[in-house]
Length: 252
Length: 163
Image (cartoon, rainbow over all chains, first blue to last red; front, side, top):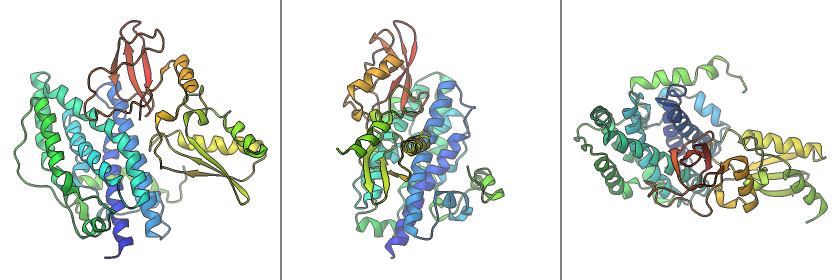
């Protein structure tokens, strides 16, 4: 396998996850349940977009075809996006948003922690920086899950419902293919299997502190990483890319 | 340090943080290095947060202030390693923050507890200095701040988060 191509693909996967989840969170700007949460959610969105810009810029350099962060964000069609299906799921009610965020942020935490030891110096620095931000994201969503799960009857019920809805999407975060294998061998990529147990244990701890039930295992979401997205993705990109596509040379 | 180098640092030392104008870009720890490279001046900066919207403003301000004192070709280099930390903030800068009404970051206390804030962290109110305060939200008016309120004087205030 061509290492340069693999690394480009690897960076795109990391960046797309942050971009699409960041976009979902940005949809709540001015629509948060309370002012403090409106600010918190948009701040998390901002962190994710910052991370996305950093890694997509690097992806463009690795690729060497002169594409910058904007080209990659705004001028790729849906099937070239590599984000996992979890990130494109709609916000639903606040319990669903927080369940999605927790499943992702806990993963992100372990992922960045490992990536900060990468042989690729850029990836390592990027991960060390992003890790600091992710700790706050993880705490934020975990604490909400505990608060709502261990709250009133209604908040408990809604939190459980949100968790059940998002639960089957987490497996995709741990999928591996030839790109991963090749880069793991070179000490560049993270072997996510190494922390799958720690991840699951961390989720169990949060869920039990929240007095919620661990949802039943059922189907497993898959496809995002090879560009097979759900119907939601087209709608997201229609909004996200509309300005850049209508005015291709627009500068802001 | 030669006089040209001194002039660059002196100029940088007058550029305020666009969001928190009482401290400068140098005091904040965003400026990491100054180098004369061939025929241009290179300023190396590091972002506080990946998505900090003030970064572009930092860059523009640095370039335009240095242009004004005669450095015509100033280029900004962004470096991520080592990652910015609040530990780089001087005691003087911390005191300026407090006087301005922002509780300064605790020194060297990057939260190791990771998942849950273990017990109430003591953040003193910048107004009345009471340590009887509570966290309202981990995200405040900017990415780098959390929102607290003081149980003693009842004021809400920003806390500059440790990272």
